[in-house]
Image 1 (spheres, rainbow, N blue to C red):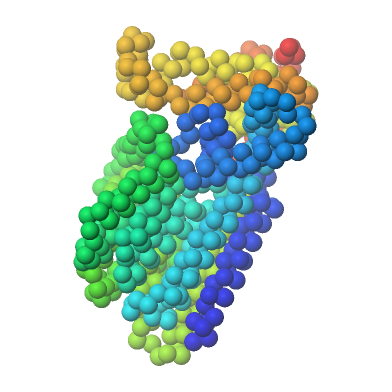
Image 2: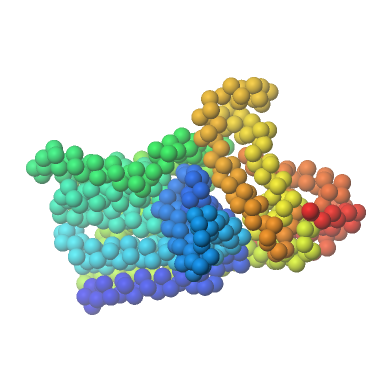
Length: 580
């Protein structure tokens, strides 16, 4: 088959095309706000402020390799700055000031930093996929026939979920591509030596560090490696030595296990508890999610292929224990996930990656009894459809994000056109996009470290009754207060950097107040009704809201289809006071 003979070249070309597509939508022509989601900022700021000794945010993801990318990008920027301004460096404090200056620049230009992170992510995932393709092509496992290799290669390099995530700084792209590579190495390596097993497990640690939910796949990874190794005559010393290497890798790739143990436990298990119990379900499983998934013909076809592929591998795979571990781990994960009241496609990401192999064998099983000529055409059509489907997925996602962000982007541009130090109340959507003036930063910094906010947050996290929260929190062990305040500590450092440099910054800034439907665990966010009330009391010159105020006539409206709509109202009774 011509395609098989040139499989490496064809796969490399497709990888390059997808990478170019990711570069275009992620770097050259991103959405209007550059960021696809505000979550992207959590990873970059965590990497930058590791240099300040701050615990990263969102350790339940955890995106630690991506945080390290940001960490090294920041030090690289600082080193370049030191080299180019070497004549201005006279003492150690001058070097440390470079870090402050670059941190201040980052806080005011987050989008530029995110673009560099995306470039690094695209390169890393491209390399992982290339190694995956080479492994599949060179593998001599009897189950990997020519047609199977072609289908598996295309399925791996055309995973829509990964390519949609490629232009976004989130954990999925790196963790997904790594996990696919590990699955293939375990299932189709003829003999796994202790050295190979150690490499696989270290890569699995990196996968877990990037997306903690892959921890649930540990039974398959460890169990399969044990099955591969137990038939070999391996000394206890060899096991001990490789175990020490693995232990070192754990603490290197996930150092926060040691430095922030309770933060990781709180973040990970706290998020799981919320998703499982956020709202009661009327059914045993989340049938609304299941029906939404099955509403797509592509998903239905892939589900059928998965079932056929599972049956085929259970029947012919040489190690029944390994394949039972594989299928059993997948089914157990699906069972527990589908019982969650709050469920998104990203929550089933490990199951999606594990299904890729099953889909490949399922499709081969469907066309198995066809004539050779017809079989080759079906394989070619299937591969072409995979490329088209993923390309369209990337295009559609970018188009959707452009539409969703257009109104917000236009509203932000309008705000920035106002007079310096203007006082405005805004939806929480705007936070992070509007430059804050001195009065705003001082107010938010004070709220961030206030005792009242700390008491309120601890009372909710630790289920302390509000009526006696002050007394109970004061008697609470110090460690409880420490692991519950990592976000506030990071924010406090950011406020310090901003306040230290703002006096020398002559750019336009604004006195902004933010509101939302709830203000739980958000120090500088007020309730919507309170913001409306204070607007009527002449405390803001403008208010920008997603809900129309009947007693006012909007002076500006952002109402394009696709995203949230915003209306701007002016209080003409407001007396403007410039911030000192």
